[in-house]
Image: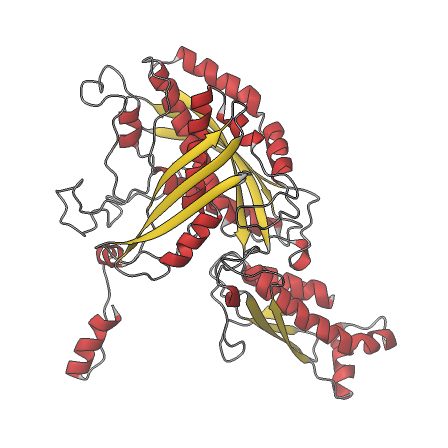
Length: 522
């Protein structure tokens, strides 16, 4: 795009502005990486996974861009919440003839985790047991090591699992789903219970640092500048709360300056869900420096306001400005035995109803429980969970990308067919669950981050897969009515077309049997 403007600007020696239509922008801009996985799994008759061998392939597009880093996170999350005594995860990025794919919320983590959940379903079908049983018997315990060698410290996934099973009334709802399905032929319900864990840190080690600049003015107000970018996720609000708490002043007296490199240089990207950790800790560091300088004046004037203390210190020629810095300790990046500072855990239980004749579905209810440590701002965290879940729901069920390839010959090779709202569907108010309940795990402080909190931006996104697997559970019920109970692969996204063809019945069987697979752009 820059080159398209630069060439005429150079030739004409005049400013050139290029405004893209939506379809042009979607055609040219990189998307989330499509993944294809092949796995071999060894297990015993109790459902315990003994060994896994996974080969992951991602569609990088026409350049490497961030594809290597996305694949790194994918292989680091391919275990999800499960302890595999023997595991080998191998990832390859494929160069293709489409626009260069790039970063998106989750950054490879959801693509790696959905493969693990696919073989959990496969193992359960082979053993003729519930997939929830297989998931539960393989959950990580405190002190277990993940495949890269990192020892789990503060692992709350078992607690999250057990508390959500109870609060969502999962077992009773499962019986109700079975009862509904026994009485209805062309409408089927499904229910799924899916956990998640998401590592917090950049896999590129030197990104895990942050800076901040804090000024105290003689009127008692505070101005904070940090390296993170506010894009609606509530970062500035959390930073203001951290400064307020550390300096012991009302949050209304804390002002946040917009991010600027002339104040805080060399900032890392506002990504990887780590910005509150990095810049919150940097602000806390700066505030603690200021507290040390003001300590004697607080002791001299125990009843004074910050304005009086700041003015007294200023008259005593004390520097009321401090630069804070933080770097994540102990981690060693991708390839080391501690790529992440800690993990954020969560689980979701979703129930759906599927119209077998059309493939249309509705999400009836979703219950989510997230471990966010001691939340700095519960309202923001719950909003992030709701938004992340909804994005994940779209990713796993309706947002299908169709490119011109041998399976889609009506589209020219390398051309994007789904490049506008007419063909590319994102979640709307009609797609979110009829009932959505979000809870935060209580009494679970995190010693590895500022204010004992946890990052929350990306971790909830994979919980949208609970809707995907609930749909698959409903499809299993529909297929069972035709005498078919074996495992079958369902490729994400589970669009109505794919759902309809997977619900094999007397109408579709002449054209597509139980082994039919919809053609998917990868």
